[in-house]
Amino acid sequence: MSGHNKWSQIKHKKAKEDSKRGQAFTKLIKEITLAARTGGGDPAGNAKLRLLLEKAKDINMPLDNTQRAIKRGTGELPGVQYEAITYEGYGPGGSAIIVDTLTDNKNRTVAELRHLFSYKGGTLAETGAVAWMFDRAGVLKLKNTVSEDQILEWLLDFDVTDVKSDDTHTYVFCDPKSVETIRQALSHHKEITIESAEIECVPKTPMNLSDELANKSYDLLSELQDHDDVQNVFTNLA
Image 1 (cartoon, rainbow, N blue to C red):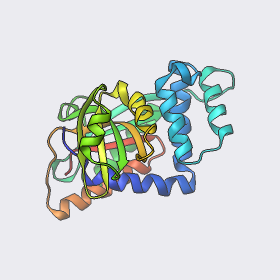
Image 2: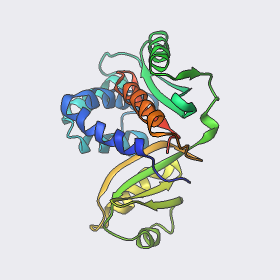
Image 3: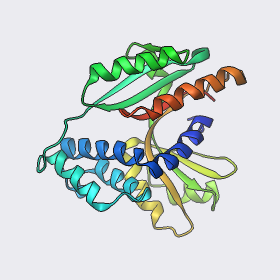
């Protein structure tokens, strides 16, 4: 399992900026609504919903917002029906890109994404074109306060596939179904600060590009991430 790429750091910074202007709230409300619709409105029996509610706490989303989103999902309140669709494409230089969306109009969304890819020097591709280059994995981002060995010792009984560290953070990779269980296990250790717990597409083999092409790719990725229907953007760009 490869470590996190530069785009992951850029995206995390963007998420903090988005939360200040409300865009992160809007996108997360869509996810909560869909999770409640597909898995029920009780967090105790809906692991995906529990994870999203933790994310809502992290960005200080008001409780009323999350409760309304859940009720829209369960049908207790009227609301828009969102559909989850994943798109694949190539960025400048051939980097692979996966875009997760939630939309109430897939024809509008695909047309706008196709335009964005083309305008920024990329290409929207067919389903399956790049998905094979990634593993869908749970990823927990921790502040560097304890060693990798200590984390592995605490998680011996859990489905952890890898642990990687950089200068400031440690990343725990696991089966997507285990993200919430591992988050809860680590939260019992006061030495640990969990910054995020997500299900991500992790590139099997990161791709290196020249600075010029890489910067053009980051520009495309940022534009995609800012689209109202886009929930997540992943790339194999190193």
